[in-house]
Image 1 (cartoon, rainbow, N blue to C red):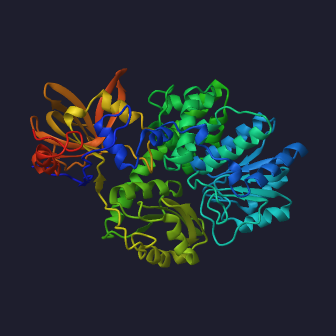
Image 2 (cartoon, rainbow, N blue to C red):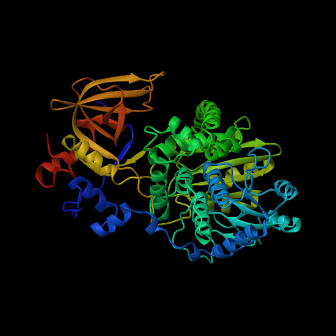
Image 3 (cartoon, helix red, strand yellow):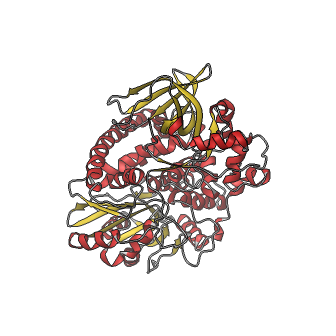
Length: 588
């Protein structure tokens, strides 16, 4: 008997969901679960675009920042853009460069080396910008925690405009303007903008003031927004929808070369393409090479040069993947020694610092626990934190602040540095933090190794119609995740291991006389392979792709179980008596 490998968390039935125009009962049930009440509310969500964007003047210091940038333009000052070495920070830099270029200005740009300088502003980098003539520095995706460095910039004769989306610390930088929606005195209605999203809002406002326009701002900002895992609600959703439309029609050679290597259909990139193929390539440059490699590609207009840079970035991406795979294996083995459900701290000075965030992410996905991973860089340790939804990474680092040299982040992710001699104390303090964090007596910790199912469906509902309805709800992401379906009523026609290492399971499932494809990536080697003819319940997402140039519908499987051993058996029995098909499953 094949049992579920993971815990299946079934939704409560909704016997009588509201109706929504253009959607059948299964998707109407999903929408009701996600809080939609009527067509008007749903319509605003589905069509999010320019009309969904708030006036940037509502953000504290935004007008002050724009006024100072305009004065710099009018006086012919040298403007510098200071970014971060992740995809959000790099794309924010590109947004500003594109906007300023459209106004006839070529700004200096500086993204610190991950190893040599680390995250945020540095006095050495500021000194180099001042020597190059800069009198105004605009930060992207950093700066809120750099009060000391901003003060140094003032003494060097430079004004600083901080644009950041991370949580402020105890001391606000004495910058000309500090534009961060998380400022305590900021009443901006959307707290979920990323660094790239914030750059898009400010740069667009600058262009509107000066009667200018620049192509690809939303497209580039969409990449950073998705890379930083912004909720696919509110302004971030609007930016991504606008950006996907821009990317589909871009003529910029660098973007086209990148999409040709990373999007399933380069002329119609999806949010999934950006999340799983585009952003990792951009991030690879900042992780194990230099951020300028990716930035120069995003800005490039010459096709031949773009192809050369894209090929170089692809090689870096391949190297990063191999490095990540071996490090994740070692980290998983080390994590296995720390039992329980609480936070885990891991340190290995042989690990590449640039991939620690990826390693922590993979461990969170596998273990469902908060993870802090660190490695030595010169005379200090640098690390990354990733966490499930019940554990606020940035606040956790704030709780350990006395032991840290630098810290920053947001709810799901953070970064930190500390002296090597403080590691044991930090590891003890971090591991002792409760779940949830901050403590909430009314909330249970997120369950590890659990699948939160959105819809329980009979196989009869699987088809192009359902796929099109689900696709119309995209883009998906945090806050609006891709629906997870539990499907019953299928029998195995064929099951075989595929992939170079045999670590994926390809399934052909029979639905009456029809055959339906499914794929389970990363199936553990000890997981039983279903036999032909077996009744099998599947949990996964429904996806459309191209196979040999033809459209194909298949289920991306996260878990499976024999129907007799699956939790869906109870729903089948109940459904036969009282509840509607499409929400629970009628008996076979």
